[in-house]
Image 1 (spheres, rainbow, N blue to C red):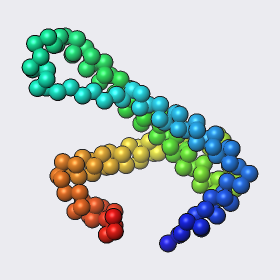
Image 2: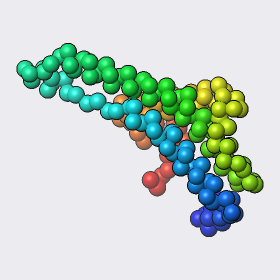
Image 3: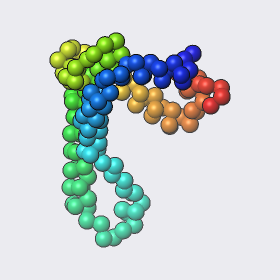
Length: 156
């Protein structure tokens, strides 16, 4: 098992003389992949509150929920076709940076190299994560599911 000192020395070696390039690539990737969340608002509305309130304008409510659903769909499409390739490019950037000098443009290499394979793999991975998270949440059996997935730590 690696300890803190080994990880720290590896990071120092990997970033020596390339810190600002790595920082700029991370910042750009964070802005581009985190920006889709502005389209995926959380819309919480209690059905009981709607039924009890006689002043609810149902036409306005339906128009508002339709707009929010449209923005959420745009956010999902953006995350699949834009954010996933950038995440792939960032992983490639840091792997190449560990072994030598890499270019800033590597951040966008997910768009150039095997685009659909990468997007498909990321989509399936997120779909599996969503399914597992949903099944754990609704089953209420968190400890058993963590053991089955191999992520159970007896101390935590």
